[in-house]
Length: 293
Image 1 (cartoon, one colour):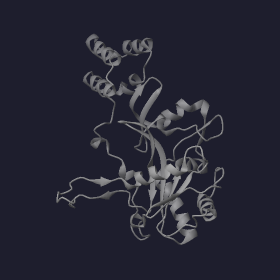
Image 2: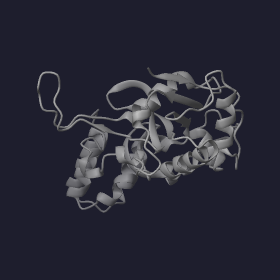
Image 3: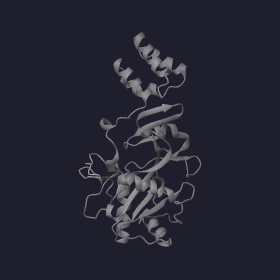
């Protein structure tokens, strides 16, 4: 049986907060507490960012998003889906202005797996128990409406359960089936944490078989990210055509400059200053004007 609960009383997190102490105290005070061997502690990335003092001014939000962006995946008007330096594909690079002080935004931890490992070490040292930690963050899905939480950091957990080489009940060989259990745990925990309930921590109980013994290598949430060469959907349709057209004209380095343009005047100014042959400029105008969604 799997049990999931989110303790109250976590309170506000600030720079330098001892998250391990905070989590242990909150779980111990909950009727379902204390922590038990094999528990998976799921914490929202927001409290990690607050504890690590990753607060920025909301007035600089556009610059902060650019700082966190490795490349643009797709853009429609003001909405930008980008690949971050972590390898995550997120709206606005995960820069968040919810549940933070007015006038501020939060950025994601620079190394969420390292943040998970630090919390894991603190929890196991305080409790002496074999536990796992998942750092979760909200993301949309390319083919579905709405958002769900996913694992962006993990420690002490087998993040993927692979079935390749096994057989199903009908005797069929399983070739590529792999459950992203860290993401499933993050999504399940979000059902009890909720966005407006002030419960940024959840405990998932009943999955001890996925918790790694302390002497085994940990899985990392980064292991769930497809490498660029394996990502079949690394850009939106319009953006992929734009990049191909720019590459054909020898101007691929202009991609980030052009992909975000929405105003016709700015587009014309950039194209006029690019030194392109008339045919190449006409091709790029057609791509930028096309509805390829």
